[in-house]
Amino acid sequence: MKNMLRILFILLAIIVIALFAFTALVKNEVADMLNPLIPKTSVYVKIDGTAKEMEGPRYEYTLSGYEKSGDVRTVTFSASKKLREGAYIRLTTKRSYVKEWEEVPYDTIPEDAKEKL
Image (cartoon, rainbow, N blue to C red):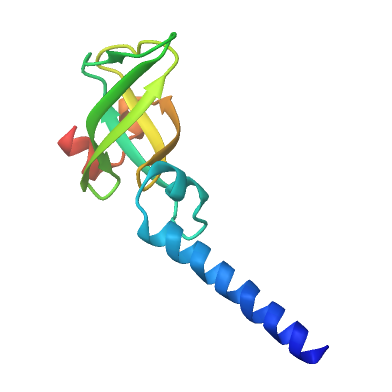
């Protein structure tokens, strides 16, 4: 019985380690969404009117965005409506996964990101 529990524990540990390794090494939206070790960050973008119309009433945007530190990132996200040109958007991201977006006033954007927008 002790050997059986030991083997079960070892197998369970291997599975957990494999799952964490997979989500840490594979860089795609699904892995980023599921990985609890990736922190959420805010990325700020300015809508420039380059929306790509997708199937159904969805629009895809690929823009340069800035973290609060001013670091640049290219982000791709979609919206169910065409966003207003010139609008400032805060994206909540986990690496390449964009969890949500919201329009924000210019004066709420951190200074380092504001300088680059």
